Amino acid sequence: MSRPHIQHLGLSQFRSHARARLDFDGRPVALWGPNGSGKTNLLEAVSFLSPGRGLRRAGAEEVGRRAEGVGWKVAASLEVPGTTHEVETQALPGEPRTVRIDGKAAAQLDLARLIPVLWLVPAMDRLWLEGAEGRRRFLDRACLSLFPDHGEASLAYEKAMRERNRLLKDGSRDAHWYAALEGQMAQAGTQLAQNREVTLARLMAAQARAETAFPAATLAIVYPEDPLPASEEQFAASLERGRWRDMAAGRSLAGPHRADLDAVWTAKGVPARDCSTGEQKALLVSLILANARALGEDGTAPILLLDEVAAHLDPGRRAALYDEVCGLGLQAFMTGTEPALFTELGNRAQYWEAADEGGATQLTQRSAP
Image (cartoon, rainbow, N blue to C red; front, side, top):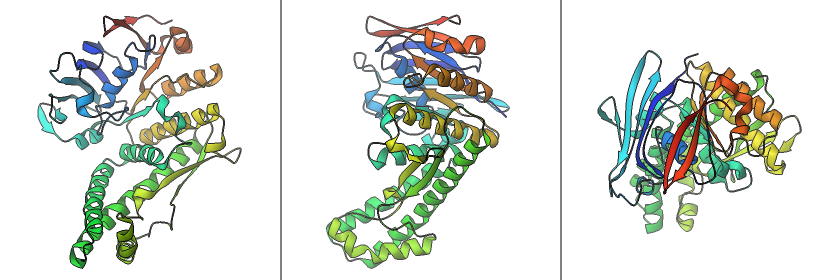
């Protein structure tokens, strides 16, 4: 299995990091420090090496250091099978985020084809208790890691749906324009749905093949109304039949944008939403590891971002997580408040300490705790 990793990471004016350069050797990275010292900010910078708004879902204008007002930049040397790529992403004040790969302008979606980045952050601990949007986003991140064109299909679907919703709100009766947009929604939406189903099957298969201390989840995609039609033609016909209902609502009421992710602790038969806080965390860790295994079976491995990963994990499961990360050969960035949380890693990781010095993060490399 190939093991992509970040060799060098440079930050400029990114949140609490005025300037930083870190060198890595591909092993997991353990980062500790008190709350507010900038640990999560570092992981967020790494998450911007993938498409989208990063692990905090922040806009480009939100992550620059406001005092300087000069914009921000993240630069990385990425070791991927057979070569090294130089990646830069940045945003100047008032401008959108840009990406350059090996000195050439690139689209954000090109990052998905370069290296997968997966993350687990404390905000996701309530994934099974809150609305469907977060679970759908979680699922689509997994899809994007396995199907780099998933992002393009999602953008195409959302664009066509916005245009259709505008016609619905305006009360338009233009059947030809509706038909064109519904054809685009059906084509992109069917691809989204198929990617999601295959991704769930891959995740469950990866769980079943692994010897792990983390529980397996039985996963399913559910809809508040009828299931999504199986073919483009059936989906387009369904949208046509639903125009009057959708016009009354002012929006499209059926489609992959209404999907939800359902999870059940397989061994116990308990829905994830009814599990304890620690059990819900263990299920999330299990799915992230399953995603990493599935990618490994395709011949590549992701970068993992595990923020405050020790929270809600007992010492046994924490040690098991470290063993699995190291066994998969992943470069994982893991944060915690104290070095004792990483004792079980020993010499299998690199260690950094974060401290706040006058409103800016200072990073210092340390030896194993």
